[in-house]
Image (cartoon, rainbow, N blue to C red):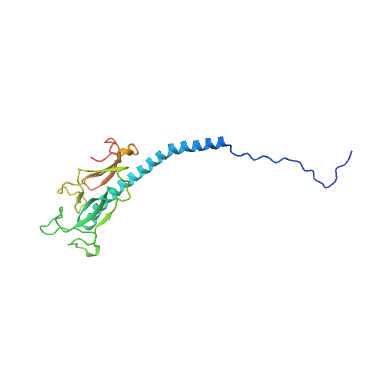
Length: 220
């Protein structure tokens, strides 16, 4: 028997493995599956994004109501929220003004001296808290092809608040509600929303389709 040479390791002979790639059929199947997933997923994602934008729009108007009320209380003044149409998308911008009544001249509609974006209201008893009108643009909201907006009562664009923060019911028509819903071309993209203002001056974002006892329902 022959002895193996000392100090020399025995190496196993291995054959290199062939690298296996995708075949043309496998690649076509993968592309087809990805296409189906995109076709199913993109509309759902688009509807979800529109729903989030609608909710942001509702909060946008809720913030306007809240600012008008809080400003009246903070300045012990009358205030108003005024809606104006945005030329870019047809939605409504908002602006908050304040007014201090004088003898015989109430802050009612066009009566009284209201603040503006460049001038404070006359008669402010606290000159250290000068207030100039604050406005917000709705230009970032979806256009009419995606989102519809309606005010109640129809045509109302203003609501007035007393120094206690209550809605001034002597001024009519007074804006009481803003409804946001998907347009006809995007029907069922999201559930409609509403922003409802109570006589106490509190604005709530709610579900107009919810039952009266549901916490998501709109105030009466």
